[in-house]
Image (cartoon, rainbow, N blue to C red):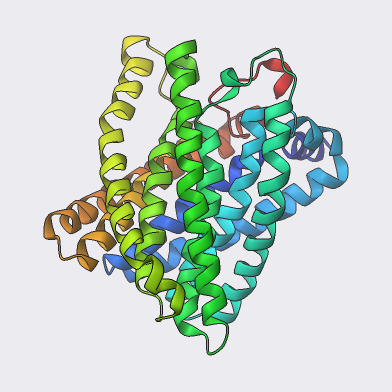
Length: 358
């Protein structure tokens, strides 16, 4: 009975952004496939699928048993955007399955991801922007807002990956990929303005600068991957209009994502060394692994497609780093499951919405 109560507590407190575990594992699986580490890639693919299924069941149980907790999440801006990880996780899993030729499964996941993106894209931001939690709208802007961009670009990645392998609907899939890519670019610029203004005007405290700010870099990287996939699609009219723009903007986003790495590393130094906040496992670490893996894949793709060996080499190095980061984070996750209380399991938001928000 005590174990059942403990599981029920985990379900109630589960943050929807925990799908970042699936996102991180899936992109590292794709990255290791690029490196030719076939066995590791397959193992990670199975872990991705298993984690995705378990999290779907836990969230379904949460909706059925603790609807009040779900509604509360929708009223806390830095938890509201966490629902977008469902879209990104679905798309990343579909993209990985597509690498092994599972076209039907990828199409099903694309349909689910695109539908969820359409619904959540119009429903979640108004909830976050109008929530009344004692803060101004600008004070609510944080790294989790970039999940809106990541979810949008993830649909573009999967649609572009599937498009060359279907016999009908290529033009429609290309249009979907191009639309999501363009919307994602616009959303990135809009969200970046909000987050930058918040940082400069409201000065986040050290305990507010956890891994979720790395999503800003991850959003640039997935924009690059989406652009590379779009360039590789089968020829359709929309590509004649967009190909040059996509190539140029992808290089721009790769450069900006690269520029973001030193400030993000300095933020970690400022948080953990300068202000001595303990460095221990937190589920928001998955929000660091995912950008590292996506940056590695994006660098490889943009370097190989455009014939730039240096960028391609950077991508391979980054894949090694992302793989090591995944193992370290997974070890921390396993240790937390084995020996820590359920209260450590939910994904901690970078803004720490307070004791009542958990």
